[in-house]
Length: 207
Image (cartoon, rainbow, N blue to C red; front, side, top):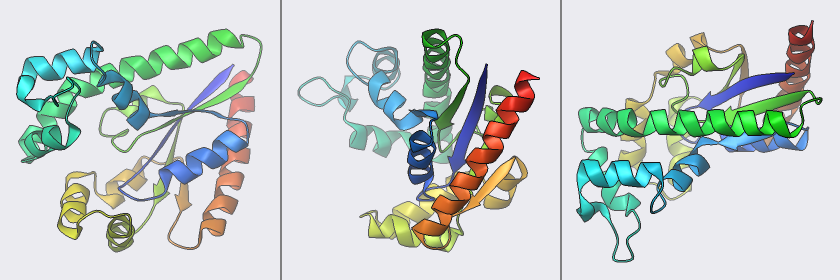
């Protein structure tokens, strides 16, 4: 039996840190960003779809996707971002489904908690795809501060946050919330508590 968990949150909310904690506690984790990176490789489905949509001007000299150039085109307007998401999200979702099935088949007699980490998880219909939704919550002003500390331009961080689902709406979809506004240790403690609840959800699913 498996319990599928969608782990999400806004820009610089700390999703990856929570995902690592879950992995250390025994979950199998899938990072949607890593899935996208795989799909963008030459001859993969995402690569072929992007070149067909935007032309070869989005490629580097070595033939790989120039993600900076692609972002400049695809995120120039909200409409352009929607266009890219409509192109890539179905491919990402299908690859995640394949990975979940593969992991289930590897251990057919073993109970597993499988966590998929993605920023636009709810926006892409994740509420219907996963048994449980966990949201890592941070106030927008702190998101901007942390994104800038990572090297992102403030205007870019503000623009990205503005295009993501509003904080209040995201929280309405959550089964569990991890508040990452404080120190990392506090978020880790919360992640441990949530994982215990996920194990309880898995046990209930078995019954």
